[in-house]
Image (cartoon, rainbow, N blue to C red; front, side):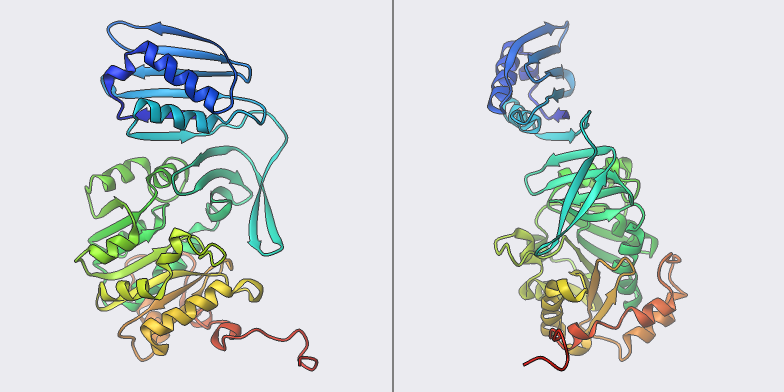
Length: 403
């Protein structure tokens, strides 16, 4: 584990005995066996400590003048948890922020098992691991796969270099085609920052991007070859430019902001019906959709990631379809299934045009940027929901043998 701790009291970073105690206690609590700790104090300030472990080693290098410490914890075996050691050390030192990177060294080829549906998983072969960390909200992994640099959250693939543009264009392009103007956009989730970039490319003058997990957003900016760059994210965090990044609960933002938007994008991992207390479920609920509707300008559009349309795993999409129609009416919901096939999207229009697909096809040529993966035929063919969704039912195994 490679970590940068920031926002630490300079006096703490210059107190070598306090550092020794904090490092030793964190390592022992994380299951490591500390053999010896050596320290070197520098003038006029700063210190380096190295702990020799039965499992390998750990080190701290401090810069009191910057309130920062660089920490490395390298372990082998199954009993010592290097990430836990880093987080305990950060807590003991009172760090305001922590940035983590993971480097895997040695061992057999690594894999990740992604849950797909009950009784079915998908196994990913991982190349280089760029980042692995447990944030306060989720497990984040960024690694090379056959699809390029890939983001996983809680072991579920969220985006990959090879297909991310297909996903994000399917999410955003129909929404911007359904509105007469796109000047103000709210993005909830979507840690990579691609939607913010698409919104600006479409002419948005102001984008509020609200995400609950700063660790994940910053890791994406550092390691993904798409979305925010570190410099672009830093500017957005300073609110320097059209994109303003806010770290917090998207539901609270919608409930308490007085702002209104042309487009609201809710881009989250799949709803988790088997985990009723999962925080993200609240952002799929009908009452939240209604609050988003009330934050739209006349003619505005709400879009949400709605799940997978495959018959054998479409439960979340079926539930989202019901809720959208409850909030926006049967004529106010537009469906689009991504060519990436894993996801589909629902667009809620409080004041829908008579023929939404015709409107989108007509406006596509005038869009400020040319989509890579969407043309008029896409808008014609991919906007028809599967029959199992339209009729809200499952199908019998054999048409002549069902009860």
